[in-house]
Amino acid sequence: MKFFPRTNDLFDTVFDDMFTSPIFTSRNDMAMKTDITEKDGNYLLDMELPGCKKEDIHLELNDGYLTVSASRNTNTEDKDEKGNLIRQERYSGSFSRSFYVGEKVSEEDIKASYENGELKITFPKEVNKLPEKKTIAIE
Image (cartoon, rainbow, N blue to C red; front, side, top):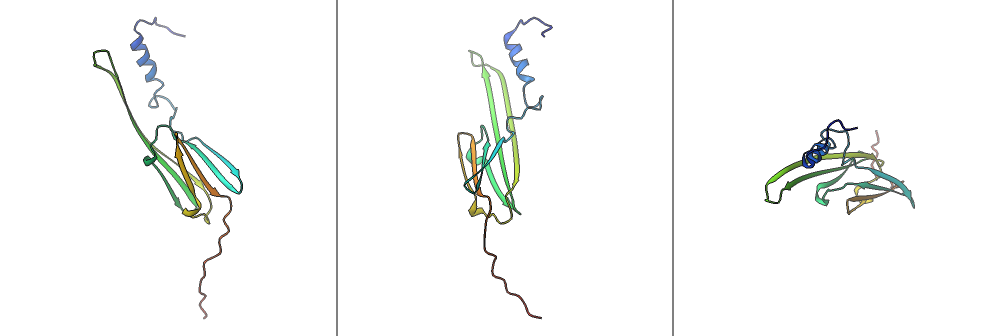
């Protein structure tokens, strides 16, 4: 329901865009939406990272937790036909998610690829590693 007549389309568009901005809404364009599936004894994580560059995505394995972090910076400019700036928006954000993969999983067990805004991570469901050889002291 609109209370005021639309008189200036540019003003209305900018005004409407303002209230769909992540600053004014709970909408999060970088929610790192993830699908987890199991196939052939492996877990597959398909994570959406729209607008991110491969070099802005980092994976870290620590104490059985795989942490995926990403950052994104965008700058949008709208100019009129004379080249005058009418609107300029900047967005900067960083996000991370952690997944428990197990304490037996090592960096060598994890494979990752990134293409067209989608990060794919594969790691074994169960890792059967032999325990390290340890010496037992005799008292």
